[in-house]
Structures are given as structure tokens and as C-alpha cells.
Image (cartoon, rainbow, N blue to C red; front, side, top):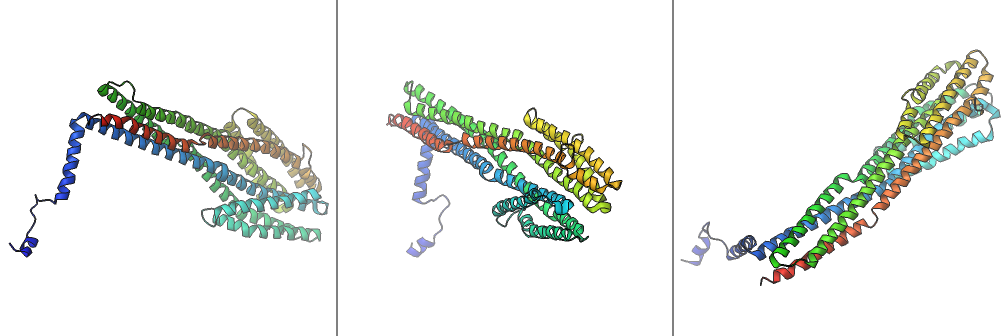
Length: 453
């Protein structure tokens, strides 16, 4: 047959290249040795155990890194950003209430009230800068940041126009003030609320990640399986070689046991502390912050009712609605007290509720004076700082809420920091102990395999 014919001749299906036949035959031989010989069975068991140790180490490392990243996010990013979003809303609402009170006082506006208004605007600017830098022009809160960045100067301009007109005795000053407050309520505060909602959701997600329940459970399960495999391998060696102890395999088991105990304690502590930060800190704090927002808005309603005089019916209705939601049965303060449980936070929530209900009585008296034509007396009572006056009652509510908010925020921050610290060095320890277990297993099994030569 010619060379060309040999090249064109078809290869029969049962013919294979020599190289392919060689490695396949070698693989089949190894499989047969692993199934039928003691040395092969030992090697196969050691290989399976080695892979299980590696899998357990990888799963544990993933669980630790994910938990650490989430706990660190709670402490360094989502937690502080949520606090900044709270401060942004609070400062804008308080500035609106201060502007209204200053307008009612006219030329008699005290410097302290003017300073409070300016301080609130400065605080809102700082908080907006923080959340704006975090949004980086992306995400659901980016448009809200833009709205606030562009809208706050518009609001302050309207307030200053109202103040200037009032000082000159012009009657349209109150219209500018109402326009400023309406703009704040319709555009700025909803944007601030959206930012707060986004940051609160990110904080909740980070806390869920710091729990690490699913990955921690997988890691513990893998460690238990690997530890059982090491124990069975040690028994196999002891049975076949009459050695009671194989140091390398025992070292692998000890390393896995240490990793399991350390990981369970660290990840468990992180989960418990994160749950505490959520239950004793974030959950009641959220209700208390919502209550404080409502108190500031109801105070603005109360002041604007007096500013608008006969056209202030909408503000009065809004005040009644917010007051019922705040101080009524199963209202915001009731929910905050339930979330907090027994302790100083619940006591502060109860004190705020009592002061708020007293404020409603004062408010009704203010409305009675106003409707009966005693406008100046109504304004004096609404702006009075005594315990049985309008501003004094509001300050009692705010002081109690501020104490409770500070307590819950501190509890949440302390527990979150402790949760992050619980996993310190665990990632490095996981790598080291996994390598020790792998090395110990190889060092323990390899001499036993050599004995069969």
C-alpha cells in the first residue's frame, strides 16, 4: 500500500492512539488498585479526607470573610450613614419650626432662636455632604441628594424673604413663610426620608450579613464531616498497622477541632451581638427617630397654624393626625416602648408620651385663645418655655426622645463594634489551621503508604 493510501485509510473505531491508551490504562489500573489493595484503599481514604479538610477550610474562610465584611460595614459605613440621614431630617424639620417661631416673635426674636435656626441649617449641610459623598451619584438616594442640594438654598431664600418682609411691616411675609414650609414638606423632607429609608435598608442588610447564619452553618457542617473523616482514617491506620497513634493524623484532627471550636464561638458571638444590636439598638431607635420626626413636624404645624391665622385649617388637621399617630394607643411611642422592653429607654418613651399628651392640652388652649380673638395671648402661650406652655412641652418631649435615641444608638454601636471584634484574627487562624491539618494528614499518611513498597 502506498504512503498516500495509508494516510487516507480510515481508522477503525477500536483503534486508539498509543498515548491515549496509556493514560487511560494507567487510570484504570490506579482505580483497580484503590479498590482491591490495602495501600490503594488507604490512599483513597486519605485523598477523600484531604479534600474534605480543604472544603471545610474554604467554607469556613468564606463564612468568616463575609461575616467580617458585613460587621465592618455596620460599624464603619451603614451605621454612621444612617445616623447622618437621621440628623439631616431632624435638622431640616427643626429649622422649619425655629423659622416659624422666629416669624411669630418678629422683631422680638431672641438671638438664641436665630442661632438655633442657623445651627440646624449647618448641621443639615454637614449631614448632606456625608450622605452625598457616600451615594457617589449612583443608587436610589442619588436623586434625593440632588433635590436637597438644590432645594435647601431655595428654602433658606424663601425664609429670609419672609423674615425681611415681616421686619419691614409688609403683609406678604407670612405667605413667603408658608411657601417655604410647603416646599420643605413637599420636596425636601420626602427626599430626606428617602435617604434615611435607603440607609436603614442597607444597615439591615449589613446586619443580616453579620449574622452569617447560612454560611456559618455550612462551615460547621463541613468541619464536622472532615473531623469524622479524619477520625475514621486514624482508626483505619490503627487497625491495619497496629499503631494506636499516628501523630500527623492526630495533629490534623486537633487542628480541625480547634478551628471548629474557635469558629463556632467567634461566629456565634458575632451573631448574638448583632442580634442584640438590632433588638436593643436599631429596632427601638427606628421607632424613636420616627417619633422625633413627627414631633418636629407637628410643632411646625402648630406654629404655622398661628402664622396663617384664618387660613391655617390644613396645618391644624395635620397636627391632629400626627398627634394621634404619636401619642395614641399603639402609636409610635407605644411601639418604641414595646421594642425597647423594660429599662431606661422605655421610661424615656413613656415620659415623652406623657409630656406630649400634656402638650396637646396646651395646644387646645392655644386654639381656644386664638379663635376667641386673643391672638397675642395664644402666641405667648404657644411660644412659652415653661413646663405648661407650648414650647416647654415640646422641649420635654424632645429631651426624653433624645435621651432614648442616644441610649439606643450607643447600644447598637457598642454591640456592633463587639460583633466585629469577635472575629478578629479568625480569617488568619482559619488559613493557618487548615494548612496545619492538611500538612499533618500528609505527614501522617505518607510513611504508612511507603511501608507497602
